Length: 89
Image (tube, rainbow, N blue to C red; front, side, top):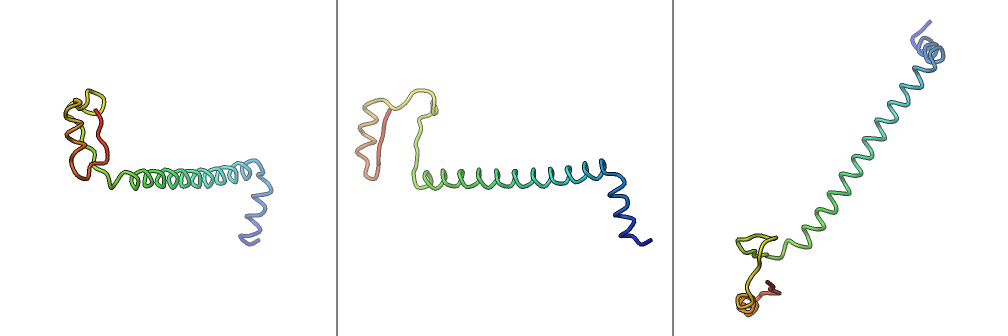
C-alpha cells in the first residue's frame, strides 16, 4: 500500500473530519480574500480623499474646528489676500 492509497482511505473513512477540514480551509481563504478586498477599498477611498484635499491649505483658529471661528472683520481681510479661494467665520 503506497501513501496515495492511505490518503484516499483516510479521506473516505473519516468523512466528517475531512468535510470539516475542507470547510475550515475554504472559510480561511474566503476570509483572507474579503479582508484583502476591504483593505484595497479603504485604501482607494482614503487616497481619493487625500487627492481632493492635498492642494488646499486650511487655516483654523486656535479654538479648533468645533469651537468659534473668525470674526467677520477678519474674514473680510482674509478674503482680500491674493490666492485665497474662500474664507468664512
